[in-house]
Length: 277
Length: 277
Image 1 (cartoon, rainbow over the protein chains, first blue to last red):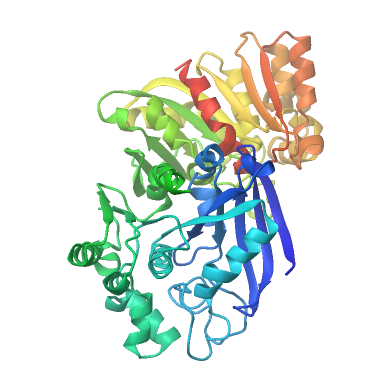
Image 2: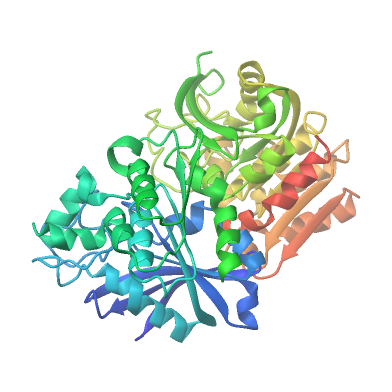
């Protein structure tokens, strides 16, 4: 496993590093960015994994969220990975903003031509943490967070692997992808028409069968342009109430779907995770 | 003077707004972004003008510097303008990253074909503050800051108008444009070959004739890839010592020319300006 350093910048006395490597599970080159706080020079630090939304790369969160200041104070590394494999010559991979490149939906694809390269679920749950823990001065304590499609990803991964993550928090997540346009397009394209497979990647369905009660912290802007059609936080509230799953869902007045929203509340999320890490 | 609202986002309980308007002095459409802190809902707040570097627009600082958190706390509005007029059909305006579009160097061009549209000096000193003070709940107290080419711009504007600005601070400025490749290319293109005109836009020359002692705060990364060839902070140190001009130039170990550097120290700059505003 060879990591290629793409670039490196000093920030808040820590180190912002961008890498490319070959992913076994995706059979593809993958890119990720890691922020190492100054504490990582002298001890193993815990890691927050960040999953971005549609069209993003590993760069958006690192340049726009303003997270490094607080992570440097708290001694938390942050890893943000690209939102899909890219440039694998799959027909149509670059045709849509909401399918293919930049739109993996963090699942393991089961049907051709996506199943070879689109295995982001395994990449994030297994392969990437292995690489991070082998190559950087980090512990195996980890938490997970994300935005929009990445909020969906963080929730499904945490709900399915509650003992692997100390905590989970998300912004503006797609909580019920089996019930809206984005999710149905992605799931039918990557998974085919078997709805039982779809349910493995739907937070509202996973809450129903959760065996552990990992608390969910969710921030959602009330002025979010995707609120009613794609994000549908009411569905998560409903199922968490019904199944007695701990949820702190905060509707933030006037905030939209942008990184301006994330930057406003990321400090609270980081301090929340630090309490568990 | 009609302002066209392009977009608006809530951030840190304040408002991030993007506008376009027709500039009289540039005879061109211009774009700017303004962050209004929550205090602006109830009282007039002072303004920090931010001038960005080569290739930037009004957006880079607002999305990457993480300044709004502290500005919201301190009650300071921030205005960032585009780095040049654009799309005026001037032959060659989009040919270089360091001349024409995105590279105004914040001067008043004197030669054809640039003199009609490239009057960013007057735009920033006079026209834009007038527009801001007329249309937003801000006072006439203002400070100025910038990065790289924008650090150059902030310094020359503050040195030539010391009573118009409460304070000035810059990151990685081009302090002696008459003595390096970027500056000589821009000045000969916009100003012709009369070196006495060039000197009006060179910080090191302006320190020599400054009638007021406005203190200069400068942060410069030691790992900046443009340090020796284009930024040359030693020249500013030398002239400030010789002419007894107050300068606090801090070499920041390991930091480069990126917004990761700016984001690390912008809080200190904002608190510095707040002490004067």
